[in-house]
Length: 201
Image (cartoon, rainbow, N blue to C red):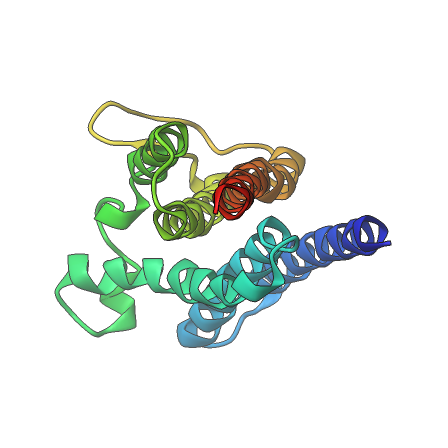
């Protein structure tokens, strides 16, 4: 029954992610109002995608679902690097940079993923795994969504061309299920260890 319930939640959240991407992207192109409205709408979409993607990853661990809210905040906060790079609080300057700001370098999510795999294999603390999972999802979903318009940047090595729209949607849906595997196996391992300790006692 629990497995069936979680499956329904996974499908529902996946549909919500697709709807969020479609509505967010289409509305962003349709908005002809002030630049600040476009920026807010784009940032909210990033945050919601991060929220729902992280919720899928943690759906089997409801007591850890607060991580989805943290992921939403990080997904949105990534764009603050525009203002840092511009050294200005003016939106016009932050959105007209000569190059992409430092948090939009796709080596960052790659490093988080490598750290996550390394920590998982070395059986690090659960909370280290959770934090790295949240960071990986937040940065990966943000970068993949931006890649539809600008491609992925792996500075200082190379930059990829923009990825097709449906590839971006597919990758965004795939990301939470990849990291979900880390969460499930990590907590199963922890529970098995705890059970063994109890039996020994």
